[in-house]
Length: 110
Length: 322
Image (cartoon, rainbow over all chains, first blue to last red; front, side):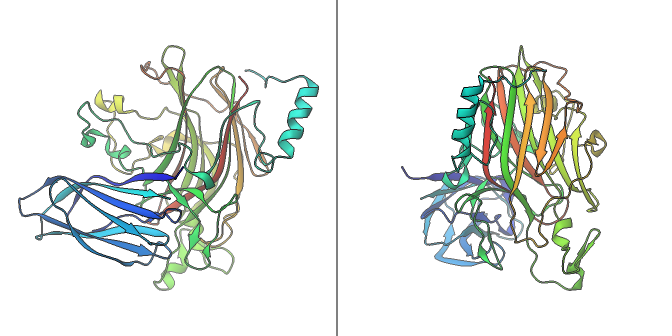
């Protein structure tokens, strides 16, 4: 049977401007999937974009080669493979001053 | 207070022989019945994030501020910037609790069981504790709290706040209580303390918040928020932080309590055994529903600095004599 784990990395967190999630170790996993659930937007044009980042040590980060993901509707998801040891997402809420409230899940599987 | 219920000598000797030749269990001293053997190289074994209670609509905004961000445990290979993968004591992976880099922030892992009897209850673990490594900066990063880098002592050690092992127990008509042991590595001013402490009050609960009795802010100490409500037990104990934030030395912990007497018994950490029989266990004044025979253990780690703090658990054994 395969191992799996789902972590809630942000829980009803209101995001504004630029941000990054806490580092998460998942070296044991072969695949990962982000789920970003938008709970509220301060304005209709509030936009949240996210990019997967990877790291060799949990301290220094670079973008994973999966591109930028724009949240649409209630739930946005994308998969990540061959990420090495550490995962996080960085993102940005635009325009300036706009807020987006989210739950952010990371589901990993061996 | 109950004594450990003992088996006949021949049976006891046979059991002891079996345990001693089992490389997984011979490093533990379990009571007669093993409820849980959690080697984290094979998964999280039910150790999960603690979260405060929420309303009937699943609105997580109703979770108490100080109990809504205890962070999900991770399966860590103990990998560091300088040497790469350190690995666990048993295999590659350990369970890692990681705080945010916010003073006062706490990370937890809780395991939820129920009691099928009363008597002695014991948790054993192999653990280590670390502050996150700091990269860069100037000479100011060669000192922190009352530690100055001297080639042996490292400021990282003063950036680690405290770790805690505790229970949440309830039964006999809703009588609820916690037993708690905390290693206070530093005080809230980041001065080395290296002292075991216990709280003199029960942990604030979501019901008490709903009843208007208590309201705590984010990063408050959820176990006992007032530093004045903590008292020392035993003499200070120096553990093996091992100088820098990227060396991992595994420590043995064995903590025994008595659920029949609702009392602490003793705590062993490394080569030290602390008699805890006189350490008080304050019960809640009010009775609790829905928790009959509750048997929870949690570990937590709390940073007293703006540095992430980590508690690593290689393995945990929970055993009872009932």
